[in-house]
Length: 298
Image 1: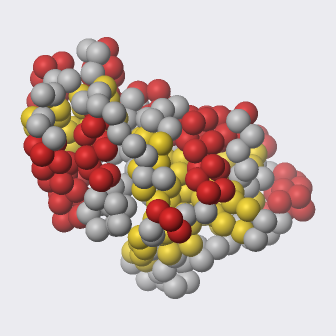
Image 2 (image 1 turned 180 degrees about the vertical axis):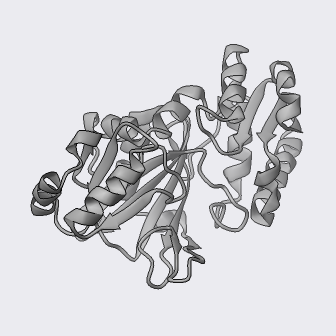
């Protein structure tokens, strides 16, 4: 029997799909013969008493969740997410550089410093990447600080604003699509695959309408035998370029193949969404944390 813990924060359990998922992890642990406790910030120093730690809170090197991950790692626990993955995925420049070195198919991408965000540079990039361009702050998440720009003036204005948060700016080719694939993987194996269908008029998974209200995607489950093997190969190549932790790989599908948009640490596993058609998600995460063998979904 293993003693497992789930580190979370109060804001994480405000949404019913997240609270239900956390409960499902705990139920799965009990059915497999393991203890599982919820830990909050005030209980962080009790982490070394456990055998494995699952982090279900926003990860960032400046957040308490990273402290929890480091404490678990130095204490010899199996931990999801492990600290190195947090450091890579929370810096999109670092993350994209890992993908580039591994030869992962992805949109045309470059990184600019403040002195390179100029109208002249904008014209060159519009010429080579097309119009519009997508600008991203390196430490963005949930589509925050990710915007399209259509001209040099907006390129400079948005770029300079994003650079108040970081020393480099991510510039990417815009690749429109009606949906993204989300391949969730752990330790080089597939946990689940779902389709994130963009809301009407949206171009991002997390978007806003004209009145500033949330315009979120819908999540569609898929059977394992319906998943394109090439999608799996591309997603695994991207995740393995980062490490062996828990990742959500966002992939776009085109007539000539697949392109990885990004790799996320601490990906959503929400009840009724990412676990669609695959309730073993919870048990497989528990098995990994407990050091038990488990099989990938595909």
